[in-house]
Figure 1 (cartoon, one colour):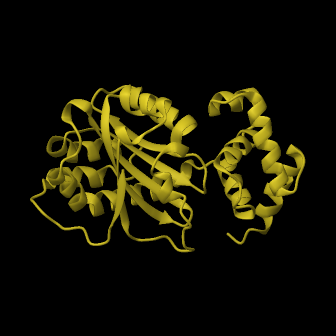
Figure 2 (spheres, one colour):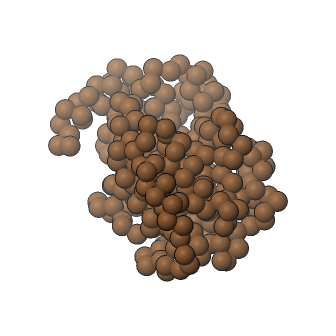
Length: 275
């Protein structure tokens, strides 16, 4: 597992203009999966990439699936993405990047993160997100379109193809600025409009108390969405009693003691938020 910045990616090789045109045409499309599908079409033949998922990491919340594409079609890959977002995202090596202390202004550079199934110690995560979808390794292109927001364009290879080879990684590096700009503009046109009130409220809470852990934020999100402890527990893959523990810890950090005070805190902060 390793990651590196692409401050000045080398432009190598010849690009298929029709593929580039198709990728640009996918920006802002009503079909939420069009962007990932065109990234897959652009890279698939040359790099043996068989699956592509675009995630948005917003304000420290669990990731939201923006676009997915899989040669198999159907809901399979979206279901895998949902499982990852609910249960395993905190174990992802990408968290080392998106959870780092970010500057007030977004960083304009691109980051590539390479993660193999062999890098994952957690059996459940490795089985659900690598073994079941038949994935050997993953290249993630990460970019920051705004403060507290990261996008991750994840490229997966099937086990039969083996790990990414140096020449294939170099090709992804050369196309990274194009793919990154496409993802950023698609998110600006479509992705941000999908943000709900609970996510925005969580952003307010996180700004008030940066010490809130990911699990505490997930438990608070369930409360803000009107879910019961049992429903939140099912979503987080833990016991209801653990949900209550996370909620109590979060309330203590925030200096409150009830759901009513939680909503009041969110609404009061929203009213005074200069944004």
